[in-house]
Length: 411
Image 1 (cartoon, rainbow, N blue to C red):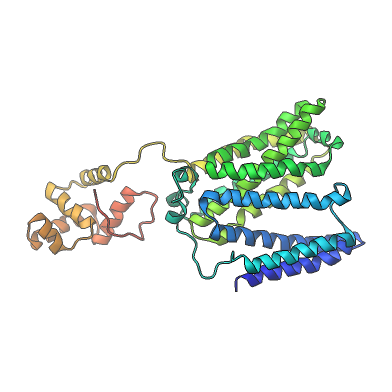
Image 2: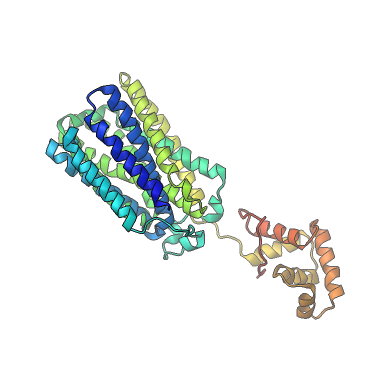
């Protein structure tokens, strides 16, 4: 039962939360906190895995952003009794254990967990409306290639690093007069907005994500202006939500289109690595603010370029009109000096017809067909029909895996 690992993790989280909330020494608190963070990571990864399997592409971002927003608001409500501070000690046990019990109940009744279903194919996932072309990952471009996976992973790590460096800018001093828990409100609103915008257009979502990196630089000149600084402080958290949705949805898209749901949590992993790197650099350069700002500025430009390249490879429609199949067919024939009759036989051959069927269609004998096929193989340097089809397929679809081909029509 695929529910059991998830439910076991929730039970372990509940069990470790008791000593963590009651711990009265720093070493115990750190130890139990590390275990709980690990378990939370497993639960988050399971959620992203399920979303990649069960979610529909037209509302994938809204589901993630909306769920994240609800969790953010819930944490904020739990902090109200503590005047903005999260509950601690015995008073926190009741809501924590109650939420764990509710999670276990819903996981057993919701029907979210797959029972033998397979991940939707790229064609199924991308048939969700007229806007799908602007949202969907190109299956032929993604293709499970390691270089594109590495590009996406590194882009998220770098984005997270630069964003966390921004939280250490001198402009962070404006938060001294604000209630930190109030940041949950613009963040939750941003998550909902980010989900809607990402579903409508991945390009718009990416642009808002890049905007999240610019705001800390804009805030540098407003440290002496309380009202504008407060506004930018709220905008910073609002746009940070686009960043949170982007890094999750990016790998959800990849996981769905290469039909490997286990890749979905990689966005969360890459983001956390970048968070750690940015926070660590911020602490190390706390006494050297000028160096901190220069480092963030230096990383900003390659980050924007990397995100742009990522969008080009995964989402951007072709800006140049692709050659039609007929154009490729004519070019292929010219390159190999096919005669008029050889072209006719080649066209029939690509449709998967036998020698007898080709002879009947062209009103020639089978021996004549065999003669032309031998000429076609000789001129293209191919050993058999399958190899000839693969060579033509490579010319027609340069990014396609030609090891798996099926007969097709040549126009």
